[in-house]
Image (cartoon, rainbow, N blue to C red; front, top):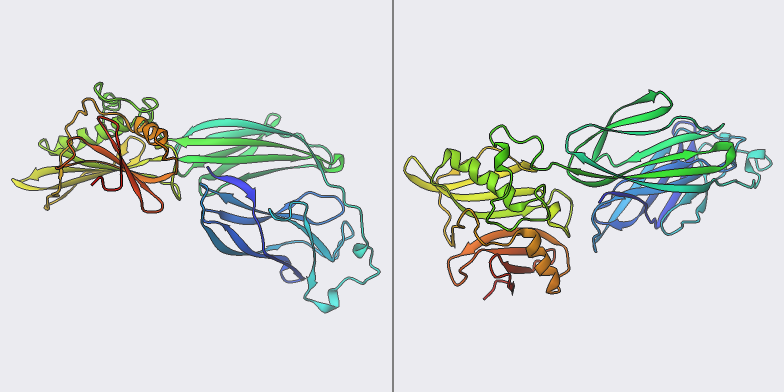
Length: 397
């Protein structure tokens, strides 16, 4: 899930010049999948206060180095707050670290007896409430978030969102509400945070919108795939529900390929995620690559079809080279367990680490049934029998 959090900094610097304004610099280490690092100014009467934030994806044991520089169009000296310091809030300094501002223009530096350099008593707004709202939205479908437009004297409303998941397409005032219209860019989970600051009243209220973005197979079906094809075969064990049915999506791929290649036989299915990093739920494996053995003009070859959305597929691609080594998977999948059940078996047997991908295939020997192969971040793998549900570690030999 994409969440907005404070990030740590090993080094912080602040400088000011008439040409660039206030410039802040940070460097340090963050989790591998952190992006959108940004300095965000916080309303604070009597001082300059700025938070260092970033958007995180799935947890990762790996870190990466980062540097970030950002300029603020702030006029200094300023009688509203000290002009020689700025307070930076980070994950390793949640109470705030006071930095001396390095004035790059010597002739514009504030005098030591300037009122702006006096130690003031800044007044930090107090959090009155934090509300959580759950939203479920379709991929590429616009949705709207509303908030009461009335704010106290000197107050303001701020909104934050992850631009890798959402794009803001419009905003305005309607009746007594301010609204923001978004469109989603990818499936997954993210946040929209709306903060109301009270200004003189020195309070703030935050609302966290947890947005789950998905494209269910029952929504906007492909013109090539009738709605009736979306449900899983009745002989297969379903996943959590019909919306997120693994076999249901594979069934669409089989029907689409067999429309063009009637003798095509299912060879393998590879399920991966569009997120950055491993996942813990089969519902996060949005992308399918389905491979078939087939004939074209009497010549044996391979057909591959890939998903372009949840239950949506691009055109089949034929290569005049057959794939050898594994057996074909009988379809419909009579008596096979679904992917969600395979994950449950994996967890029950003590394999609780997240996985990068799942591969469904059937070897010629010695295995007499299809297997789900779970690939983990460290390169190891675990197989789950799609019929008997037994676990095989590694290559199964």
